[in-house]
Length: 185
Image 1 (cartoon, one colour):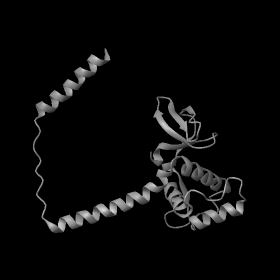
Image 2: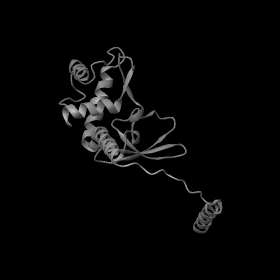
Image 3: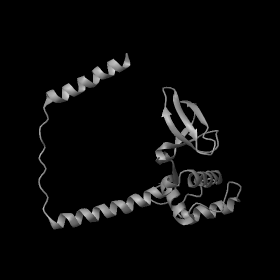
Image 4: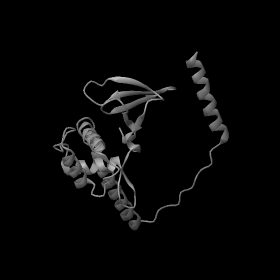
């Protein structure tokens, strides 16, 4: 699961996993113990978490929600000690600790409440999303280091592409169509 597979629906509390897009909307499953499925239409306001950012006052202008969530997880390991009923001052100081450059004029207390609530849901139901970015970076650094070491030990052979016979490709495609027709009726 990725951040692009998780969505928020306006008017519905909590987060949802995107199961399947349909012609008229999408099928979503709640990220809680109930795993309740709902169908949303195209008129519904659905926001995918990978498309959400938090306004900042620095040169970037915004920080992706995924980055903020991974910072929170690195700091608090699943328990922020806050909930949506915390005082506005507490919520603002929490975000100031995590993201010192957040824009106080454009990020409302209600936004911080959503952030805290969503983090709690993700930490409980999909903690791998919060740890994935740091692990991928470490794996990428290790692979780059291995390639550098391997490259210094021996010279690599040039890669030669072999031409593909166009008849073979055409035959494979037409065979697949025949199978689909037979299976389909």
